[in-house]
Length: 349
Ligand code: GLY
Image (cartoon, rainbow, N blue to C red):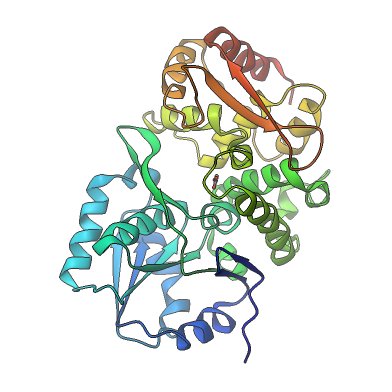
């Protein structure tokens, strides 16, 4: 059977479809010495069973605790320890079976193990299928700052199986929706039309394989034009400057936000008129208002100092411009951040 990827990025195939029809045949064409599958406590139970029977070589599995709070150097040390234990040589393959945390951290561990072994991304969340697994970013959080340590490394392949979406709790599913909508806002109004006036209760019955293709198409187009984030790729960070600060801040509280919840707030805050209303209306049914006390504004500003887009001390927002795939860059001050957060607080939805 001939394998036709849905996309190719940096000579690496991206497949959307059943693992049995994509990953299984693809692996048979490779010649790895052994396979190690990185899972978390969720994907070990809910996703590994669909993968196991497709692995044609000897394999082992590693399981790490689930959650962004574990995306750090300590967990990397545990993973590298297992690579040592199983004697992974340079002909081995690491399979990252999970969401963004597993993909980012597994990719980083593989990219640095013996100066780089092959890894593939098998994203199991909507967020990872549409965003994190595509584009070669790997890395971990450091001292509470998101994605501070990492490298660009292209995976050997990406396999997004929409069947895994059924394993997700609602909150996790909706978290990924924020990135899908982001792709619509920056590049594809037709993608957005799937979600206009949509009741959250019917979200899961949308044609997800097709929506994944539409959403990944936007990401692939941007990372093809600008793989190392010297320009247009900054646009994928729309909503993330404020969103990442919120995510880091709330991670330390008893009420952490999901990544998508944080960047949905970020997109609402960062979008100026005339698009503010459209963006808010599309996000509001899925992302109810979160109170952000004024006392937190300075902490959020401090967290934003670490944003990778910043230049010459200014905090930089990248937001969509009038046409698809065009970007406006705005440098903001601390009082301006306060105004944006205040505008979010008073917007009715
Ligand atoms: N998630 C943003 C990027 O890949 O650049």
